[in-house]
Length: 161
Image (cartoon, rainbow, N blue to C red; front, side):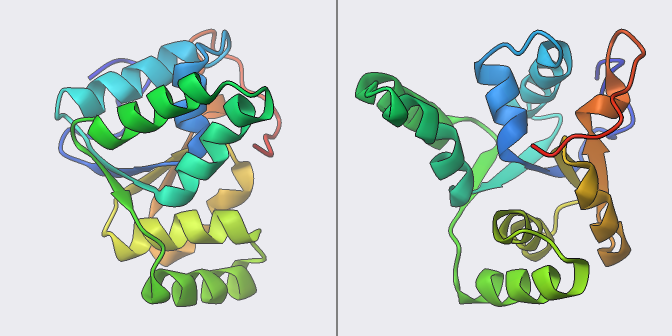
């Protein structure tokens, strides 16, 4: 367990929002240390993780946009083979729960799907950088935000990723 993610206890179950995987893949200069730490904890089995298949859609857009089919396939394959990560399909139960969450918390549809996936999968945490997700903590899940755990000690005012 690293210092940036130490408030997520060993053995926790986390939903990886799309941005957490993007920060890791792209080695985002601001968030790479925390994203790497989270991903290494998942790889190593310290954390078990789920991600909605919607995450794959969101992550692959940039590669497809520039016509980089090879990279898109590599990223998809890596996600499908990642240890301790389960990709969860959007089924009728998750869709119904997402609609309820969207209505109750004024979430965007993709965010509601991610939160519904987390809740229906019994996750303890959502790992994201979208401050608006804090409102779903009333549903009994904790939200871990990258901006709250920067290694330089600064915190951004808000993130809409």
